[in-house]
Length: 160
Image (cartoon, rainbow, N blue to C red; front, side):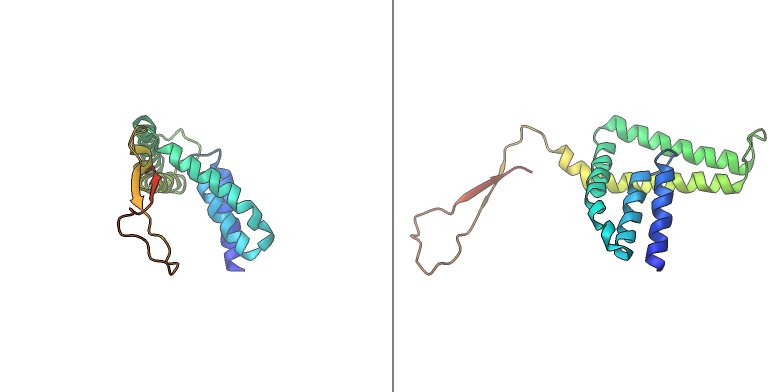
């Protein structure tokens, strides 16, 4: 019951953040995963949303310009939260700490997810396209027959 409620709240918050500043797709994924635990028929929707969220996370750190843009957006959210919270512009219709804290929390979530995306996806993106593939010897399974010592182990090529 609690898992389903938290999942529903995260899902609705994520849907709202798809158009508002914040990490909407990742919250949709988190909410959907929790809701799928409570309602198993939703499990079939988790994989496509996860794939799209992970692609968005990888795209967000694909280049230094995107990282810089995300950092600037986070700093803008943080500054906006402080300005709104402190009431520095009294003409704003929804000034106050409720709005300011929500903007500050959004910026903190953005920075946390940006660091996570960078650690999770940037090493894979940093490998040069023309890098030589890494070769790893693969041992043959023991079949009872002795392999001649002069025969080298097979090599499997994979790119990193």
